[in-house]
Length: 448
Picture 1 (cartoon, rainbow, N blue to C red):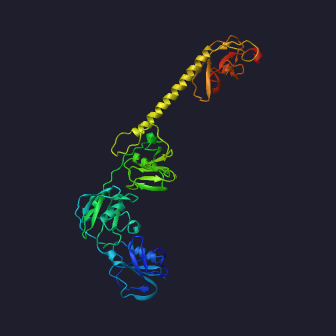
Picture 2 (cartoon, rainbow, N blue to C red; picture 1 turned 180 degrees about the vertical axis):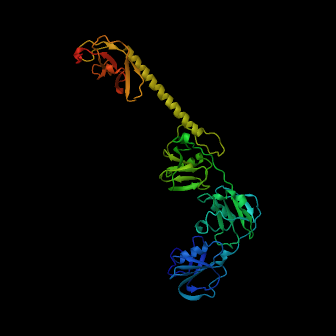
Picture 3 (cartoon, rainbow, N blue to C red; picture 1 turned 90 degrees about the horizontal axis):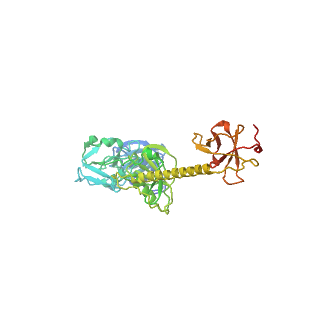
């Protein structure tokens, strides 16, 4: 039923946990089978609490709409013998749903796998007390499971991490009979205790994935099966999940994002330590905001799914136990080769320029007087905005303290730049790297 029953216009209601109730308006069962009571906003809230009641199975609940209070009763109480009470609603749970489930357990100590691949070791007639991922005061994440398989599936998909379960087929402790255990239960073996009524528990066999994103390669671009991804090590992006799934490696996770041919996956977060759950690969519809988190990696999708990768790109590995980091080393080596090529090209141009300077012939630099050529040699400087030239020839004139630089050889219209010899070595703007230095004549406007 989807419509509210607060006005008692309905005759039945099914809680989010799946427990079905028959409703009886203006009726109550007094002084019989009482467990305890709690405040409730309406009939639905009252019955929802009954279906999740911890410790003792709640089979009937009476709601007082005036006082907004819910009275929980055990599974022996039905509508038979109810009395008329205006403003009250009696809800009686479907008794067939409280029938004990099969208790046979023939796989003690054996492994059992959840649908998403997480393995568990099963222990018959044992339970784990405490360490609940869903405590009594917040039982919403508890669930009803008709089989241990269903309970294992619930644990394997739970966030944050679920490290095991206790399952009660007797339903004596309540309709929600699957109890996920939190990360504290990594001491699972010491926490187990003998139990009757067919109770059993199961320990999740969790193995952390390798962290393929050390800080040394933060910002590296890797190539997946389809696209490129830029890595941000130690970074989570909460929210905006398209889906979550288990991945044995960072490579598996980014490949899952790349497989989205509609390009709705803009990136992926990989949780190597499975802090937030066994399903540790989160595909993102939005990039969101960054949060620092050790062991997490955010991979930002760089290209669309229809862009082909280069032939020399290395794919991300999918083997969990592989020690081959070629998918990481490949981009690093490629970047190193590119840098080497750039440096060699710069060296070649500088060498060529130096040769042109040494072979150049003087001409009239400042219009009028014959000029004497001076050779220059480029030297290093910590100021990246300047290129310095040191004069290697002696001045032929005692008054020659100022120089002009021809920025374009063999060009009568070349721009001229004045230099001051007293600054030794001379400085000029880096745009005039191919300049020639000339002594300046009297027609150039220089006065001694």
